[in-house]
Image (cartoon, rainbow, N blue to C red; front, side, top):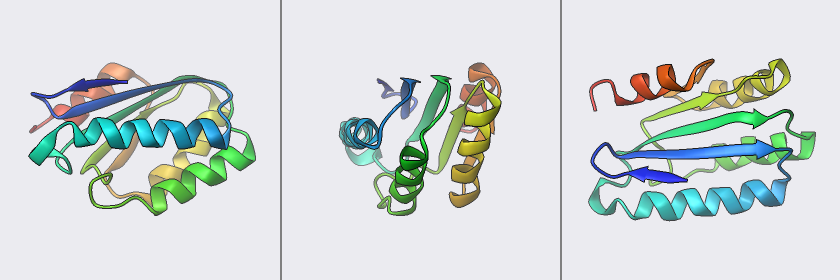
Length: 120
């Protein structure tokens, strides 16, 4: 996890086949990283780089959807970019993108970062 404070950008890198428990821990780390932005928390942007994820088990995908649906004001970035490389992961992430306004799925991490920082 990386936090670029001047740009209010939180970058999360995911890999492997994450379990719901793994995602729970990641969500807590993301929340803590956002809070380090102080008064800028809630005005941040988040980049989820899931190029290293080959598939989300169904239980994990369901947990992620619930987690994003239940996200509070601090967690709700005005813009969220997701990057995935496998077709299956892209299909799973597309469900998340449809759920959250301000979320977009990209093929390329640099395009995602540019979109996030446009007008930052």
